[in-house]
Length: 345
Ligand code: SF4
Ligand code: SF4
Image (tube, rainbow, N blue to C red; front, side, top):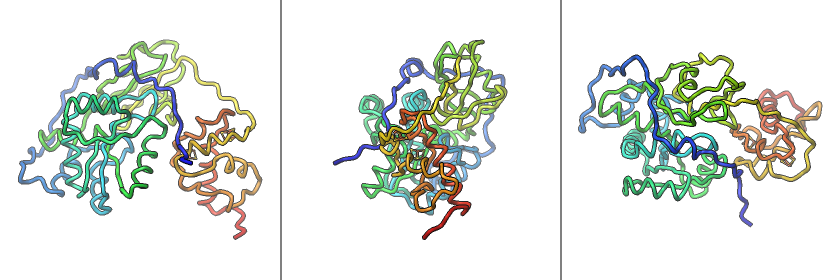
């Protein structure tokens, strides 16, 4: 029997993908960095990493400075580096939109990143066959890999590659394009593409905004409603509520969701359906962890695999009883790390 992992979510991408990426007007012009673009003969690993550092490029998916990631990957020697050009969150389309409009720049940036870390293969990961066809029309040389639409697609693709003995590492689509701009034109990374969505804005859009711009400017550009009561950044699933709309946009602000009404979560008893276990990409059985964590002194041996949790919240989303399984697994991992448990081994 083939066990499928992950969870299928209702996609809400069409509205923001209908339009081209729009530029948020900014007063300041982009400043060039102080180094000259690299010439072909100078493109060795050290020079590429130095250019990524000088341009201040940050991977939009994990917030890691690109030069640091490339240095680490050079030591680890991955079989494959994968440009992450899909958005696993159902409301976010910033990676897809960036790929559609900058296909060749992303491919070229990925090749440079691959050269910097000595990867044997470079792949562009897209979500669907439809997306793959679209990209191959733009560049038939694009070496694509399908991530699928199950959530969390990043973890599931990595797991699939690992099962095929491919040790793969991700680099964000925007980071790839920024690397090419740094090397070809000496441009620093000063802007990022953000998806703006939710019923609290009039226009669902992908907007290229200057890093450091207050979120309020971005939301007003998309027609922020006065009735908006909650703004979330990051993702509709694992995102964080914003308390101050003057908060600056960061390189990792891939999505901003404005809602008129905050969701009302109610918790019901577990019905033993196992959906949480099927959704988990890391082999954790969240309902068992949650039950164990309800004991005054949880037992170490029953908190299996909790350190492997990537906080994707697929288990919580899958649960029909609305149980905060992600929170329970996180607490279990903290408890295990702290050593404050009953060790019966
Ligand atoms: S949050 Fe952790 S336990 Fe829940 S599905 Fe993701 S990896 Fe599994
Ligand atoms: S998904 Fe929710 S209801 Fe189903 S087994 Fe897991 S915790 Fe229980």
